[in-house]
Length: 560
Figure (cartoon, rainbow, N blue to C red):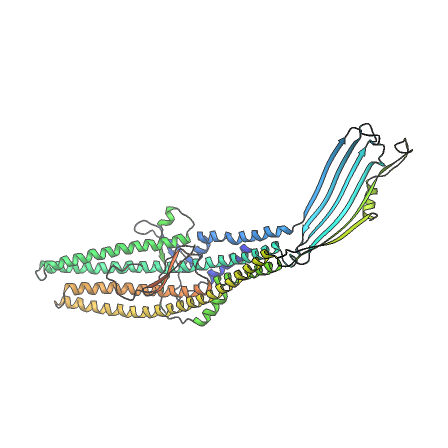
């Protein structure tokens, strides 16, 4: 049943994956090989999530934890399983006669034993036991009244604590905690899945940004090469100094370095997705090129931070785990308080016995046999179940340590652990509120950055167009055109990064309402602007920066 629920949860995540205002994409297919001969995988965001849920190695590892917790509970419940006990044995005893009453020159006794019983620990803290004991005995002693003789007895016994260990004992306490740990394990598995899915979505947007950044770098390189060609023509016709060609060559080399760095960033982003989605560790899988078919857009999304805080503080996996941990400490307080009580045990027992066999009648003590009365095992059993010879007992045992310091100290420690966990829950609620507010702010801030970077890119395009026309008319310099090209490249990259960061901030806003940080994802960075906070987990590595660089960078713009 646990496996079914986890599978249903995974399918729910797939079906509920937000579209994020993306254009619908066809199912992933292996397209024609790339020019370098590598196979190409066309991949939508939904398919990336689906593959991750099916194949992610970290989710596969985490999936075993709930199952292990199930068996921990079963193991502890096994304490209450009944035990059936049976004994079958035979014994022979021959001894030399030591006096006149030995009954034979060499008294010999042979005994066959066949006993049956059952024992069970009760959920109330007591124990119950039933046993049915039988033996058949033959002897050569002349003093034996029955030969063979059969003896049977049937006994019932019950022991029940009335104070300490009555409402809760060590076993019931452990079972309660194990069940709570089982619930925690399921919650933590869900946390791992949620974080892994969020990180894969962020990694998908990182790959899109890396590919777009590569195109921007190549476009910037093309402009630099075009300017270099024009400068060489002007040098040949004598309208430009050779030094300007050297400057243009330097700019081309610099932008070639930017292309190289961008190509490496694409490979890194692809590997992040491959690690999350693929099960095979074969070179063919790692060599596959991934082509995203969904393009991130930047339509404004209104986020309800107040509603998100309410959802997160009630349903987030880490707060659920903390509250279940608090319930476990409450069990500890209850158990420790119970151990302060005196030990008062009530024990009750009831039994019946019987004997039968062939009755030997002799003339005088040890004389010759006068007659025999046939009998057997049935006589003994008839006595037992006819309750002809009953015995019973009821006892109460009371014990109590004079000072009881150990139980008192344990109770105090349990209360401290409970109060500490309660304070931790409150601290986590404050932390969740702060994280949701920060995530909501990141959505709003990153959308503003998208708009500002888009406007900056448009202005830089206009500036480059103006500088290019002025340069053609001899009214601008090689340096100014180069600078305008560089600034346009930076503006293009900043806009691409801002769009990717905006999409990732929406992903993160959903994540912080569902799961706490930890489980499902290598390292992921969530930031606004230049500040960043790193969150780590155990799922597919998915680096994600949810903020844009608000200022221009002097180096080559590549994936952060």
